[in-house]
Length: 338
Image (cartoon, rainbow, N blue to C red; front, top):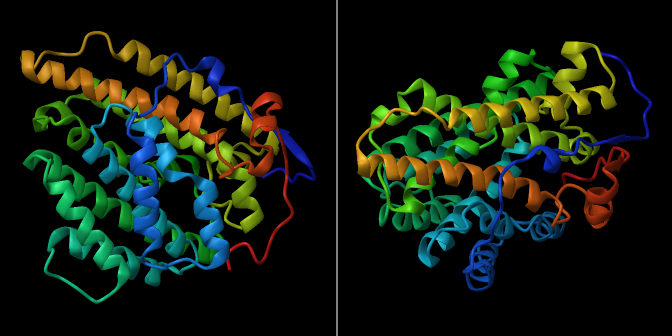
């Protein structure tokens, strides 16, 4: 990997190649403070973590990425993304073994609501599960649980790699990132939020899955280039496509950032062209598939929009970064994870 003494880098202009139209959810104003109060009622965060949680505006992300959801489904999606934040933030500071224990608390309750270790995480998960199953069909529920299992395993493996200081090769990282990013569990909420339950044949179809993976990868690659500065300051940059590209291609930071932009554009073209020529599964399922595709579009463009509307990745200068695309590298903050 080419060493770099860069003080800044320019992020790619992903909005310019994003051919999708964004929207926000009309229930945001009511549901967002309710979900935030719900997560804060468990008193899980230190003052620094709570500040980071507030700056992240998870509910605003949900507004951008599930703009079509009715109030109750929208509120439940907010709660789930906040629940994911807890799992992710806790596991970020853990080794592989402890991260797996944390994830398994979440999984145990998702499988069996009677299971309880007395932890706040178990209680939060139980509340979410009850609301989720109110609207999730059997196929949606089955897929969602499998995605949760894969997510927990991937987060534990990420922690193990972080322990060893290991940076994966490009192919291995891409496979891991699709799972530990939680994008698949977030996509798993589409059917719940839309009120549909797709047959397994849709997810077994290669053409549909090409669309699915293009959308998921666009979210992952965009997230990684936007979050790189924050993560390198925390010493967690190994789990980031920018670091992986620097090592795999033997390039500097700016070149790696540019490569993310090129890849995002390729994925966008794959997604747009892939919408043509899908097979038919019958009128009702076809309508549900089209709604699912629109839901993927909202996640792709919504993630871009949200990233510049909050302080999560770029701090107080997020509007300036959107205008100039220049990111000034932060020094390593050893107290960032306190």
